[in-house]
Length: 484
View 1 (cartoon, rainbow, N blue to C red):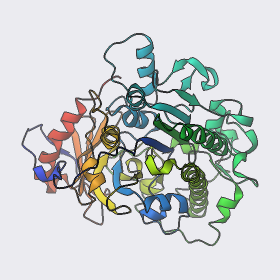
View 2: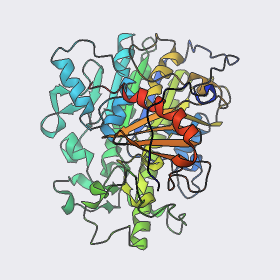
View 3: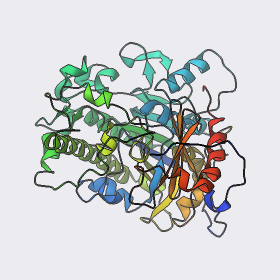
View 4: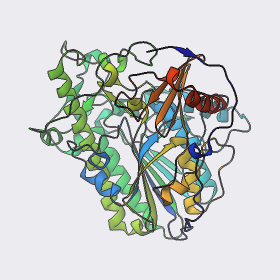
């Protein structure tokens, strides 16, 4: 790839690439659509049947998609659990490390003034009962300390009426996070298998317990007809290690998987890495980069974990409907980042390629216009917070970076926004058709998503006009990153 250095020249960028206000679309302020059920799924790439992946078994998410606005081009603000959830939950760009929410929580505990309310805190301040179950913030259960179970070390102070983390045989939230069947806990990753499929029901793996608790809380919350609820449920799989009951792996017996696109390590400027999180597990001496048979095994076990997570979504949505609360509840499903399954010779997240940043987003509410219609509008995770407040008629949240995507929720043809993402010293901006990445503050790569080469060919030298359109926007976003 060619290397290009570009100076920071401020120009007025084209209005067609910014958010488009669709004034003719009327958003009904849903006087009866008060509750929010927010489903967080860890490491979920948009490889679902409703997103075009014919080989994936995801019937419950697909059924939700058929009644939702499906965002095909939703990008997280950072390709790692902690900073991605930070931006989603605060509407702000922040640190790019996994301790982002812990730093914020510590600052609030120490009395730092001016820290903007988080999404659940904002809803709580406006009369909502707020409950989290599972992995919603970075640490499952939202606490730090020994075993991630210390009530004095909260990631999100003032946010939750209740924040719950069932642990079962895994004994602690930390044990649940990297747990396999029947209470197996990761102590040293090299001693834990990369994937597994044990015989048994859903509760032999951690997410079964999270789902049971979520159903219990949904029953309780739906009984109160006077107080709206914000229920956030964090499902851990398909996070490493890939473990799911064998019945979910059996779904893929005989199923043909598509070839891995762009499987080679990139040349020149890139955010490639050595897949360290993945490679530290017991892989039986095999490497999916060079062993294609093993690569397919890994992909099947990831898919089984997705189908297991999908089944948990189905159980929760079934309870929502049985409670009758579905008639006045907004449902959001969000993947906290993408995950490379061999693209660019990466097995994992932590990169600024499309595969590391793009994740599913579904938003559904009972009186939604044109339900089930997908949108290709580019949007970012930081925009979800102000969008939900508009949908329920709350005041706009204070001091955030994300801009509402209410237009795109109402009208799938509405134009998108810029999506900004970051990892360490590298930053990237996605707009319709192009991605611009700035490496270490000086060198740029421009990728043309209208071409077959997509993010394998740096075309910055061929399109200086597009670089000069996007670079000032990217640098302006970079100035907004803060400590908390």
